[in-house]
Length: 512
Ligand SMILES: [Zn+2]
Image (cartoon, rainbow, N blue to C red; front, side, top):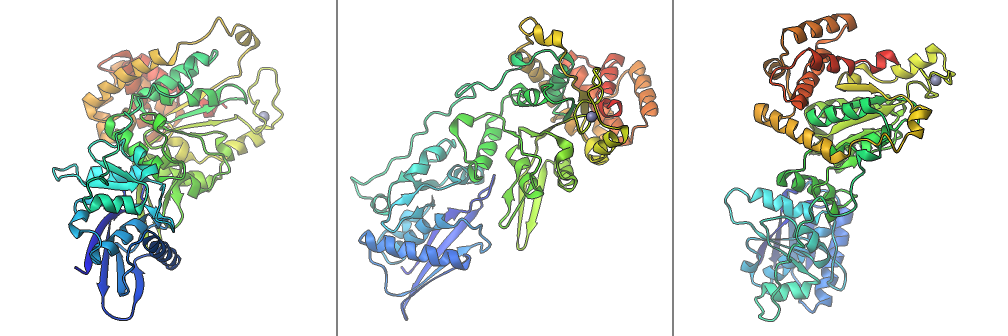
């Protein structure tokens, strides 16, 4: 047998596509060529594989060796293909049984001594295998460097084996009795309660209105904007949103973990089932925010998938950068095209934005602390694009705490997150039962069908629309928030009181 086929996977967030490594040995002048990788990668991989085989006492065939990695447009971090290439050479030259490679997937970078180095994205790779083989086919066994196997073994339904080095893996593949590896036992999946508790709403002093707005945002999945002076508690409130959202389903937890696993952040088991909270700095580029580079890497909006993306000091972000958020926020996905490669990343997150009402931050302060002219304040607000603001369903003002509120801090300790989360969960269940998605995700026709308020609510909504000159888009935003407020109240049909609260949430910027 002078041809061997080994299966592996490319590192790509959320999907990890299959890669086939073919190794062919032919007679002729000895050579070793790899096709399907960038030049530099080929050179490095060739040297590592050759040294590892020789140092582990295997024969390095003195023949024409051709290795083909398909598909050819692979991402850059390709050290992980060292192991499949080495195994392919061993199988093609009859040093391990070729059938031992069937229904198995391999990945790992080799050191010159033949040891297997830990790799990034092990969890993502096994998720890819699990999702591809979930439709009735027998799942493959996955072989990884020992140090990466524990993380990957968290994925249910796939047997993951860890090997310290090439010889121990080959002994297993050759069926050696005392060299048999056993699947890594997953260290039982931690539940969300493991690890330090997330920040709790009970720590937030005062601000009953903002707490209520946060609850409505959580219940309907609505994007939220908070406008208020420095130190009012905007960041504190934002950081408490993820724990108010319903617990992740198994599938959601897998997707989220796979995204983090393949990113430079890595996946920490204590983050299992925790909704991500990402707060990129306002100097972030559009690549950092929505993704890019070659090969395409996910941005913050993908890292926040199924969780919360917090943009503090919104007007300080580059306007062009904010514009790039519009489409993925609407679609819940982002497609990045670079040269030959195209990548499609999930990006369904809840946006929370915060800003000062003016450059100095004190506009509207009763003590007259603001030194900005009306013109400067207006210019500051104009830095935000109308279409982005239009997509933020709930906009509230967060006034500075008064001295009496501050001094009474122990007396006005607010409700803890757990109680709020229970109401949010009930409201979300109603939405899923009724329409299979959150209220934010309703399109216009669906909103017409399920959000319609009663006659009094309808009149109030129409009058507000005329008074504030809403666009059709803004009208639907209010309609959907109205539905969420009614869901929190357990009301079948939204009434005037629900409309009135939703109307309030469109007014922060006009007041500022
Ligand atoms: Zn000011």
